[in-house]
Amino acid sequence: MEKRKILYGLLACVSIVFILYALTENYLIDPGAGAFLSHKTGLKRELNLPVWLNVMHVHVAFACIAMAAGLLNFSNRIFEKSRKFHRINGYVYLVSVLLVVLTSGYMAPYATGGKISSMGFNALNIIWLLITIMALVQIKKKRIIRHRNWMIRSYAFCFTNMLIHLITALFHQGFGLVYATSYIIGVYGSIALLLVIPNIIIRTIGRSREVAVTP
Image (cartoon, rainbow, N blue to C red; front, side, top):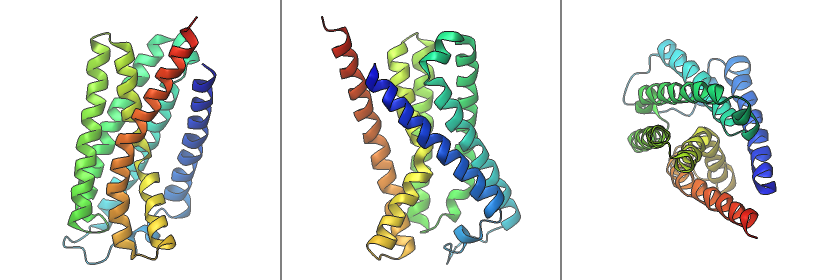
């Protein structure tokens, strides 16, 4: 139980900091996304900037809502106090994920790194949506543990943007690769990590529960 509290506390800190950063960066500091767009060179499709910016702002808003909703639904205290809130908030998360995926699908053809990056984002969107739907299917069948595990896998994808930029910075600033190449590595590297890390967390939580019930 103590390990789960520590994990949740760490998750809450990272989520809140990232939400505040994303909102500040995209709506206050650089609402025109000038710094990000400066890396989009050699696009094969003409970028309609006003439309792209509106879609991007919707994308960021619902990504933050999904992250906040998911965080609240992992709270045992909130779940015990109001299961109705947990259920409604779960649908808020589901709708938010759907809108993030749809807006990401629009932006994918303009991804930094070209077609290879676009394919990565499309794959990522499909995987995230399928995992989230699987979580919904499990709770409809009253399989609570399986629902929780699939939600852990789904929630991990809320950190896609953070992972992509961390990996990109590592390869671009750390190893000196060109930005576009580093970004491509970031996209596919994040997909790999987002499929692996949640399963490690699920096993860790499972082991801690086994220890807690062992006489």
